[in-house]
Length: 273
Image (cartoon, rainbow, N blue to C red; front, side):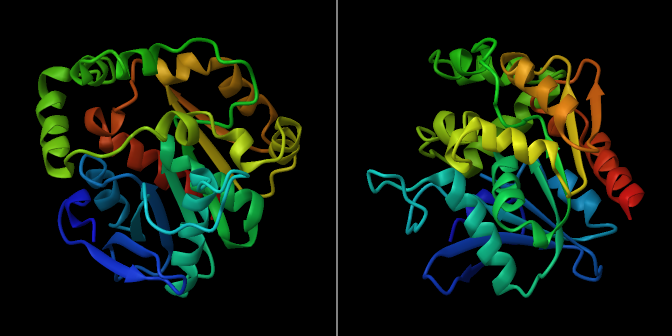
């Protein structure tokens, strides 16, 4: 069990296909359910706990290894689809027939899998900081920093208040330990073609969305700038989408303003309800 990837109580479940899923559960006394997917829940936990004041929240760890049945043509695991299928199988195992899905950056990928393959389970989808990439990439500032040999440079660039945020982020990294991030650029950054058969199919999905969706970005998020054209395309072409753009916020805004993120999610769901 990946208990170290969760701050506080962690749980696990073995699915029918033998896959072990680690998750956290908060707000058990509430009836309406939110599922969040992420690689780990430490700095994002204040958002989860705020949501749990009103919703029954499950935070599901998106794994990097183990069994998989969503395969590429070469037999390797298609993680973009596998993460989504894990979330779906988890929900079915927990008897969660419908839920709100919340994803930040890589955590949006399972949401798009569910939009495409199991829309019947989604009440709403809060899709934060990342859209399907249907346009040419504008820049590569984010991954240039990530691969530059100094992870702290990338982290500082991702925070509005690094003087306080770096300590929090480094505590998270110490708890999580070393993880294999080699699949992240492929499946968590440029994932569109890994879920849909083509970009045209993805665009068709956006234009015919039947699930209420909210996009949220920070104007100083390097990842938003790297994929600016795709983000604007999604904003302009997703049927009935709500969009929030926060001036001055960066990629790790869950550290800088967790209450604001939770507030936006709650307002979005409340307005839909």
